[in-house]
Image (cartoon, rainbow, N blue to C red; front, side, top):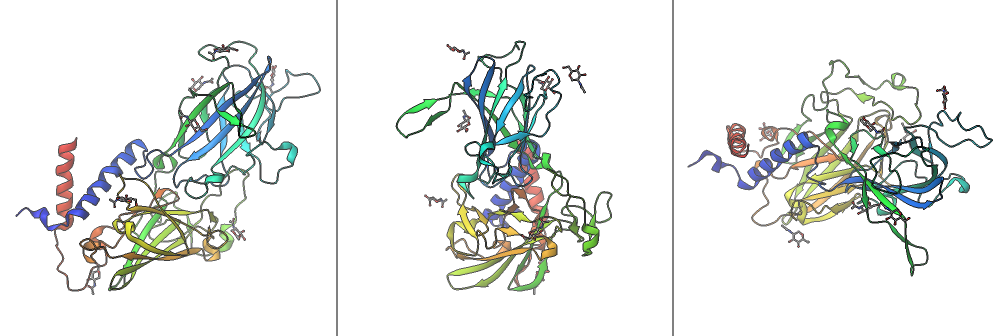
Length: 443
Ligand SMILES: *[C@@H]1O[C@H](CO)[C@@H](O)[C@H](O)[C@H]1NC(C)=O
Ligand SMILES: *[C@@H]1O[C@H](CO)[C@@H](O)[C@H](O)[C@H]1NC(C)=O
Ligand SMILES: *[C@@H]1O[C@H](CO)[C@@H](O)[C@H](O)[C@H]1NC(C)=O
Ligand SMILES: *[C@@H]1O[C@H](CO)[C@@H](O)[C@H](O)[C@H]1NC(C)=O
Ligand SMILES: *[C@@H]1O[C@H](CO)[C@@H](O)[C@H](O)[C@H]1NC(C)=O
Ligand SMILES: *[C@@H]1O[C@H](CO)[C@@H](O)[C@H](O)[C@H]1NC(C)=O
Ligand SMILES: *[C@@H]1O[C@H](CO)[C@@H](O)[C@H](O)[C@H]1NC(C)=O
């Protein structure tokens, strides 16, 4: 008999899929849980006034679970010539730049070759607004709130006084777009069919020209070290399997700062438009977020899991947080208490991946560690015939990510074990052997 037949085939499949996709993730910044996720910048040329042009710029978050949180996006680009922005509604450039070539009374809004635009806050005076603007740079994910996943602003800019080559369009489209959010990189603008719009629902008009820019997230670009880890426990075993040591960082390494509970050492000068540097509670894993999965109870037809998310960062409230979980039994999820849930349509309809997020005004804000920040839920799952088992760690999640960043899981060897089950001592070495064989075949 071949040695790897000892291992449950399904879990082997999952492990291999996991290893395979982990490799893709780390090398290409592609997320198998959200393969088509991106942020699109759409640049609509609304009117050509001879000297100047009116454009509307929109930013849409087309990601299933990753969102843009405070301090929000900071959109920038390179003008191809010496264009200057005369006026802007619904957003503003953070620097006016050198406008000395304009001697008149009225000065342009921004004369920089590389303007950096930030969103306005909600509640901005009406005369500074444009349609669908002013969200403080925050964009929700597609799953959490489809109404707030996009934002727009309008501007009037003066064309370059010299013509710029390399443009197939009547307008000169700027290039080198960036979002100013760690982890995102944007491609080259490309022309798409002009955006159509309607004012009354009957007659459709269209803008002169539309260009899209696609920006993709890479967890590795955002931060090479993880930001979250998973601990496990089960009712049938008193062992709590903690987050792996050094999941996110190691205490004592250069650059690894942490505090125990002393709030006075936490104070830092807030910097406009910059997220506060994390101040993490000291632990062996050094992660700002810990997710605990507890297999709580077993009934005849169902089993129950308690999920607790703990914030160990002293200086950050996570608003609109979300958790993506991969577990084969999620396709038989029966009830979710005190979180929202939606299955995610991925992996060729295996229905094993879903997203949890907080209930508005109840637990959608995960408070700082100093405020005892944690949120929790219990879920009830149906025991599917022929699949459900407490053995081999089947009841534990295959993968968890918090706010789109993958969490570090304990090694399957350490999972809480059922009492009196013989442990196949060589399991992990067999998995290693098997996956090495697979790699040898693949590459
Ligand atoms: C361009 O962006 C818009 C969002 O503004 C999107 O609906 C459209 O599908 C995009 N077009 C292409 C070809 O990517
Ligand atoms: C865009 O970036 C590239 C590389 O940094 C640079 O060579 C190019 O001049 C930039 N484009 C403009 C219009 O500044
Ligand atoms: C501003 O631009 C003008 C030319 O338009 C130049 O003469 C001047 O030195 C610039 N000033 C600064 C501070 O860069
Ligand atoms: C430029 O605009 C003219 C009409 O104003 C149009 O006929 C022509 O197709 C446009 N060219 C491009 C490259 O879009
Ligand atoms: C977190 O939220 C609480 C309650 O809204 C607030 O009192 C506190 O100042 C916030 N802390 C930070 C660091 O934003
Ligand atoms: C996933 O769910 C869809 C819709 O509920 C269903 O049609 C499909 O058969 C399910 N796939 C699996 C593998 O269970
Ligand atoms: C609980 O699980 C741990 C870790 O797998 C194992 O070492 C221990 O023997 C288990 N306890 C019992 C009572 O089976």
